[in-house]
Length: 119
Length: 108
Image (cartoon, rainbow over all chains, first blue to last red; front, side):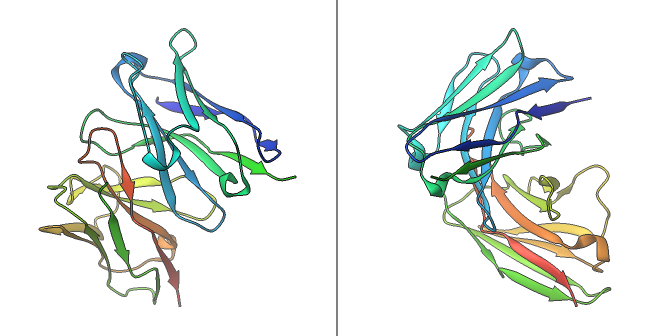
């Protein structure tokens, strides 16, 4: 069955970068894209960016452009999120989620990765 | 960017009550809207997609409606398992999603 398994929690200092990984199982990787969504403590869901499993095309939330990069490794079926110049506002649970094609919701979610930014 | 305005932010209901959550889009998203349920400490899951289609396995007490740019999620008879935060999400823009602010449902 479809599964998305994320990397372990991370602790970073302000100004640093972090990479969170999402390994996928149970479907044809090239057929679907993966989004990243985060949730700050006690806050709502914020979509961050998307990558195509087919050709690696990306789309990013305007607020994060310049600080975010999403990449994929087709050989390991893994998607990576890199976030740079971290501040305390980036402290959140980061989720990866697989789409179901164009104009479809995010049906399959990873378990979440806590990223803490603290000096 | 399309903005999604969701209300109320919190909802307190008794078991068996009928409750409704509203989500308004800042421009047309056609019927490309989903509702998610996020229990405490868990990842979100899809309840409704395409504004009114019930996801497989979701209880029939959940329903969705669309009227122009206004969308509603209704729980016909609230159950204890429904304690969660509910989010709307538009997916009309090409792989660029927007979520509402969320509605926390509590049981009285």
